[in-house]
Length: 411
Ligand SMILES: Cc1cc2nc3c(=O)[nH]c(=O)nc-3n(C[C@H](O)[C@H](O)[C@H](O)COP(=O)(O)OP(=O)(O)OC[C@H]3O[C@@H](n4cnc5c(N)ncnc54)[C@H](O)[C@@H]3O)c2cc1C
Image (cartoon, rainbow, N blue to C red; front, side, top):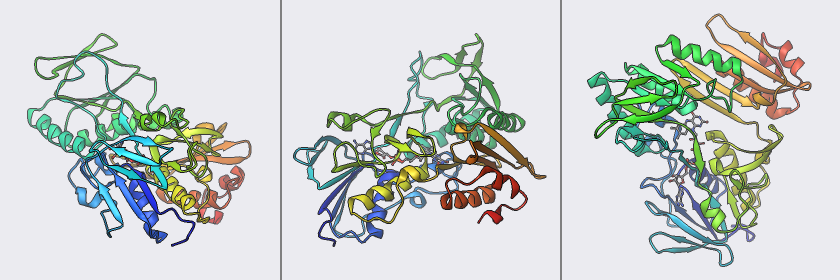
């Protein structure tokens, strides 16, 4: 082990950031002690399939598991919670009473699903989707709804709401999705792409109502009807809420770390305490693509930041700063694969190229460079563009536009 390496690393979290961090420690042959504290009763696992293959029953939790202990130097504390960090003593106190000392600490606590605050919000057939337990409950509830031929009401037209609506519809359920804003995915999609997505859902039978909020849920022991902001009432069999995430920053705030819209970190994932790092959904970092500090809730971001933070902790200098990494995420809905690269909303102009199979590639320009791209069933093109901008983050838009017939020419 590098003599400069920390002897004890503690990781708080049981998701992508925690799992990817442990895997990166292994890849760098870290020889010290690693303690992983997971609030859930599972080893760290991947969440994207929870609204896709796991929800429709085509994959198992085992296939989603990111890591299990591989040697006695790796200690897992499952179903336990980090309750307090003492930065002066460099100790993490767990709910179980255990105290774990650290030389370096990594926080990957993600976030909680934002809850509805309306009458009837606590009926048992109101669902959220964040954990594998939520996904199991949701799967059972969808099956019951199908058997009873009742309607699924999805609240929230963001990525998780749309994926659940697609899964419900594909399972043959009558599905209505309401979104309070005038467009779907308003925080990540330009209006023309959101309109395409809206049409795709409508064509496949999802009843989408934009500019429509929920006012109350009614029933005796479970929700059987919902009143909406337009005054209408719809009968419901179950309700699924996807209205965003609240980052789990309290632990960091209580330890007097700098917290804004997330735990504030630098390009290496380092917080305001040089011995504490934060990665994933909970971390707010300076992103060169967006030109400001952002918090990203994506699988790829958690992986990139985890690798960067662990490299920085161990003083390895091989991976680029996470702030420079090109943002990228995907979503699968029905037969559509959407991929978003870079920062499309930061663009000041765009170009669309469609193909005969109904796929579309939207390119976004800022000044003269390619600032973002969105592919609908254009995974190969997004893969090529990702490689091209990783090589040249200032890739001229004109060059891309000139290579549209064969993007491989960019490589
Ligand atoms: C249903 C679903 C579908 C998704 N689909 C996609 C997708 O298609 N594409 C994409 O790019 N991204 C997707 N994402 C987002 C992606 O999964 C997240 O960005 C990623 O999981 C973030 O990793 P994280 O480690 O920051 O947080 P998480 O994976 O949420 O993990 C946080 C963990 O920390 C634990 N924790 C919290 N507080 C404490 C504490 N005090 N002590 C101990 N443990 C604690 C939590 O219990 C949890 O296990 C999806 C997310 C969900 C929920």
